[in-house]
Length: 432
Image (cartoon, rainbow, N blue to C red; front, top):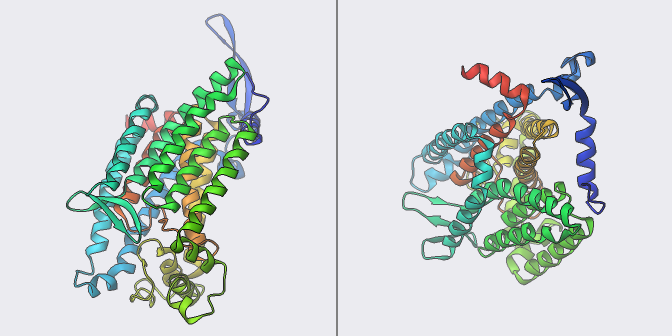
């Protein structure tokens, strides 16, 4: 039953899905049944030819896999290139950071392959357990094994390396929130009462609070955005949405004001940083990121020839790796990276719109919002449109936790995409 109070976002989503489908009457076992079929599958429309190829779910599936693999490969190369000088100056092998990234890449690809072969019903059944596990692991950052880096206590030391539990929480939210919202929408339709949305909202609030306890506001924003998109797709009333927006703005403002570090970052992003003190302090990283992008020109100075990576640009191999890409590969390289993320988002969106299962569609949308939203935030920070937040570029930035969980999310997305009839048929043929 349609909820008259559902958000405009949810109505737009339903109308778009309906516009990409047609209803056919088919005969089976002597009875007539109504069947919904993607409109672009209809032979009379000419099939997937020309521009229609962009809507081909099978094309989107293979293109998604290709983009993920290519971004991961580029990430390993650029991490080595951007970190080699930093490693040498720290009396380490110039290969150490690149080798570390390659090791986590192998682990992530293994997790991706495993995740792609797990059925969506398994994710659905384990979603609650995964969310609780993510809470428990995130709380470990507040124990003695927790590690503080650049003012954020968001890592735990497991002996041979450190891991960031919030990355696992992002994936857990992508898997659990769609199911919680679907249940909430069903109960709201039955009872004519929208109070059932309170449960997923409270659980999302707990996730954000746990991450924020480690003072990681950037990651908290990503988790919040993923959850809010799931709520909007699930038909959460518009007044509830705007109430959450107001609450989030007030809370964010308060957190920024009470923290001198965050306040300095925000003011640095939207001022000219004209003073020598400001340049040497809060503006230093942003200014050198712009130096890197500017010196890259159209085609770049070549891989390995960056000047800013000689310890001028902090976190050159991590949160600001996009600046090194711009310096070494130029405008062409940065546009290529942006275009790859756009293609990745389009492929997830296209398959989600043609998915017949609501849970599958919503999980794909949540993963798209996570990957594409985080990439957008990272790039906007590097070019100076947003204050420094410490959010890595998915698949590309150095960091084992981010790379492994992004590849794990890609595996979950592949599992969900394989539920689409055309993709399922093609992948079954390949496996047999």
